[in-house]
Image 1 (cartoon, rainbow, N blue to C red):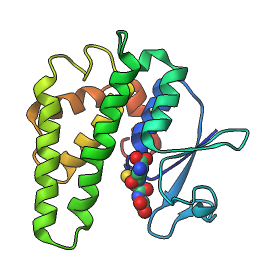
Image 2 (image 1 turned 120 degrees about the vertical axis):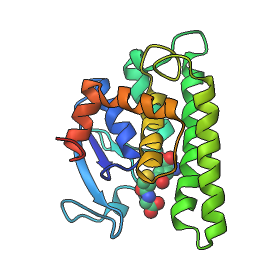
Image 3 (image 1 turned 60 degrees about the horizontal axis):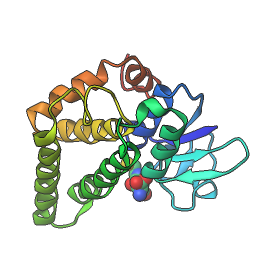
Length: 195
Ligand SMILES: N[C@@H](CCC(=O)N[C@@H](CS)C(=O)NCC(=O)O)C(=O)O
């Protein structure tokens, strides 16, 4: 299985859950400025959408979209699904919220031509992260155990922290807890983001 990723991009969340699930994967870095893989191949031939993450199974099947990939990994590793009868739906609910209401504003905060739009996007990111922080009363989003949604939340908080957006203190603490997990350390190391 291959995971096409870009260093520190949203694909880091998929990488983390694959490591946490104990699923072996070959990592292939994609340069998003020219859409060439680290082997010099045209990434558009793998995923015509042109973005990471992209998971390619050994039989050649291609799976894209953070929500779909992380739901698939969670199905292989039930420890990544929150407990309770609505566990899978809670994971999907949070993944969808992050992928649409937080990830997209990050793109606008960086690439919108107008400063006012950039500022509005930054405000939206912080207020949506605050909604999550206000509900959190344990180590992770759904309690004491790490779920797939925590991996995507971690990447969003990491970006907010690194871009100086001043995310809620509770989420900065959360990010430190996530970074202490052996599986997360391993994914960060493999992406060249930690020693
Ligand atoms: N809808 C996609 C969006 C993925 C996405 O925006 N990936 C970014 C990296 S964080 C990317 O590859 N951007 C390059 C591009 O869109 O050209 C998903 O949720 O998986």
